[in-house]
Image 1: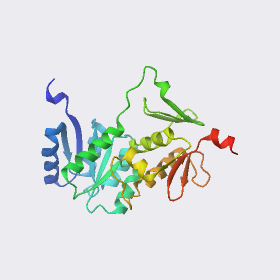
Image 2: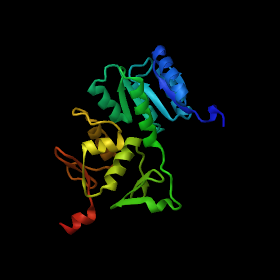
Image 3: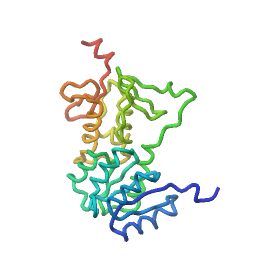
Image 4: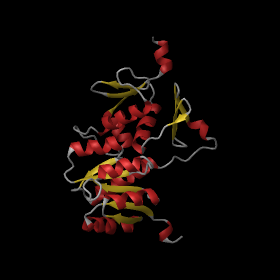
Length: 243
């Protein structure tokens, strides 16, 4: 099979043309077919019209900033998005994660770190290989159902649209239903990088997940915060027995 059929399409939306060329030159021999757009509106158009394995999205863009582009993308697609921030400042990272970015990188990144993060967000978004009967992989928590084979989540048989990280977080909690998972454990499960003391990304993703589940953190039905430790998916059967 020729190489062109095996390359993974990747979109970069960044007005720094030199950086786009550097990324393209680095990723091309590693199996990526890199396209670039240099302003927000054109980047958004390409992201919605064409199929990409992932999108690398700069925050500062002409026409529309990266946050606007991401908001519009998330209305129609869950393609993995790796955001670039000029300084890697926490406020920019949190805003991007709240809108639906899968991960972030400061523009001082190394090429090896870029590749590792890119592979991680693509891996998290890929659908697991189904069994002969995908229903065999249903995981239930009350009226909440998660299926890793079909990469679906339903509440009362109504489908929810989650980002790759949100799905991975929920699946991780579901697999440990009733047990507490620390932030470090969740980061290892879904972000594929070492825990950073000031990294609030897990909390931001959990907050977004709760909103989609319509789960009030003060009186949770699904996800309970264990202060200074992490999170727990509530096991309703265990709770009933110990009520």
